[in-house]
Length: 284
Image 1 (cartoon, rainbow, N blue to C red):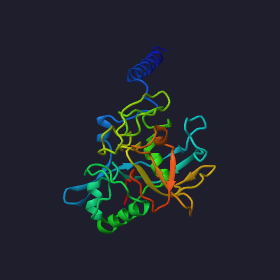
Image 2 (image 1 turned 180 degrees about the vertical axis):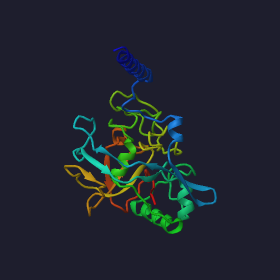
Image 3 (image 1 turned 120 degrees about the vertical axis):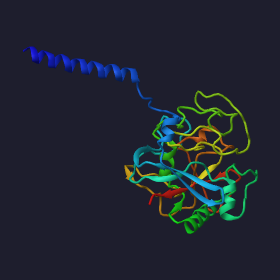
Image 4 (image 1 turned 90 degrees about the vertical axis):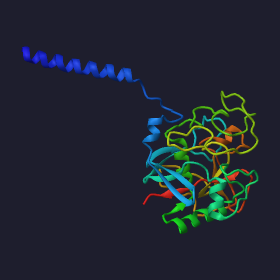
């Protein structure tokens, strides 16, 4: 009986100790907006040199599942944001930033942007231009470079969050470049920059990506169309259409148009002075 009591007491002590440690550790936030330095060091990154001193830096986006679209209660949502489960069965590399003017010029030999700056995102590029850029990288660098699917883009933008922005329920001009004269939710007015700025001027999201909200719209590979009504794995959008998807909003956008679920589209040959893109590289 004495030895049994000791065992029970020892087990009870261990349980209490575990509870104390867990309590001291605190609860993990459901919607973290950024990453700690320790988290950043754990990211799997890859660099591709396309010209002397000109690099594309990629980060590995893990496979996973998420709810794509927005809930009916989300302010600013559109009818085509039907919420549905998406499974992404394979990890992939995504560009840490939007394609810069220096990078685009190094690959394509020209810079169509209105506001010049090597570290600013390239703009005035059509979907066709963006695909041509990816195809040229594939030819010269090996591997498969491409635009992200719409599902990959939203999954990477959200980085585990379910709120309108990966920053939480609202967003500020300290977190992204958009029309700061307009507010979203409980947010306050901020800076009206009226132009795109250098990439990586704000904090990364949990996956290590910059500027998923604002700065320039980003082309995706999909045709714009209705979402499926149920769960889907590795979706690539409709087989045909008239407009290609663009995501993320821009410096010119009201904050509601920069939401994670916001989706717009334009013809693939359309060029705007706030249209850019980022690149995906398939894992070998």
